[in-house]
Image (cartoon, rainbow, N blue to C red; front, side, top):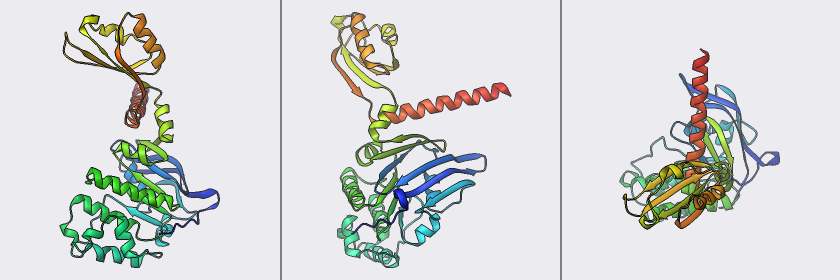
Length: 327
């Protein structure tokens, strides 16, 4: 499948400009400013209720913002979708059940303004072997692959995937992401929301973190990890080295979190999240401890995500408390 470009000057594919969306008293999207550029593979992360699905609905023109504007390729989302410039795989919405997989994919290819060859789409979505199976006889993971096939049935410039690997086993997920990488290699912009942070870490070249409808982090996976500002220290303390002085451990400089596991009187495993790992390790030895198997590593994306969203939640609670005090 050949790639298509045709973005606005500067490579801008999509833009949220001060976008807000509420559902009754709930502010799902809160002043969101965001730009996607051509050729990016972007992961959209956030805890439940962060506004990921609402943001995707606004991007695709399924809902209108209360405030602000959403643009796709310099125009409205609806115009971009009607022109076939956007392919989408959403959590909501069912599939036609009384047809075969091949028939459904062929229909999508035919009605797309720039439709691909049906056999090619089936092969790239990993559906060739089940193409003659009825859709209502598919497993959850197979249904997800059909949704992906419908999203890439034509030469769209932007592919939007909402929790695409839900229900897929590990081997199928690996094959799926190989197909997504092929879409990116063809010059398309790929935006996907996921709860599987290892997918974002391995696939995306840009990561966005939402919290309560606001963008709180934007960068590469490495930059997001660095933003968390912490590293992990782990080691063992053996009984012959003396008791584990937990107050001493908690008093180490730059300690953000401490976990001690193991049987009292036996080997204890210590895991520390530290904002200053070098100072923490030096203080261990100054305290007369004898850490064994000492390891100092950077946070993974999952730990960084939890740190960033946890800190933001704490800030939100403090702001709410201050507002209540003023009242």
